[in-house]
Image 1 (cartoon, rainbow, N blue to C red):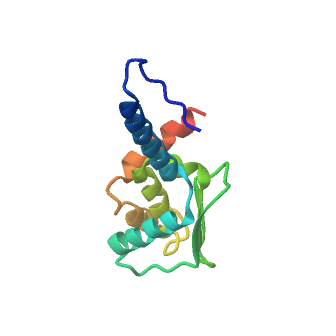
Image 2 (spheres, helix red, strand yellow):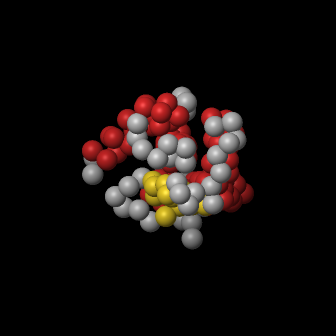
Image 3 (tube, rainbow, N blue to C red):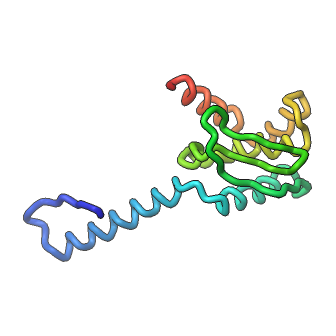
Length: 138
C-alpha cells in the first residue's frame, strides 16, 4: 500500500497523477534492487562479450545469501555466485563484482594475470573503493 500525502488544495485529478507517478517510481526502484538471477546472467553475458571476447562459459550465475563475501566462483564447476546484498548496489559495482568472479573462470588465484583481466573493466578502482568504504562502515 502506498500512502501519498499531498496539500489539501490539490485537485483530485492531480492527486491521482502524482499517486500513479510515485507508484511507478517506487516499483522501478524495487525492481532494480531485487536480486534477480536473470538480470545477473544478462550482465554476465554482456561483460563476457565486452571484456573477455565471449570466450568464458559457466554453468550458473546467480545471487546467493553470502554475508562475509561479495562473491564467489567455483571455477572447476563454472559456478559464479554474487551476494544478494549486492543487488541494491550501483550497477558499476555489481559489474565489477561480476568481472572479478568471471575472471576466476580463467585465473583461479589473485595473481597478476587475474588482475590484468579484472582491470579491463574501466571502473575497477572506483568500484573497489566503493566496496572498501562500504565494508569500513560496518
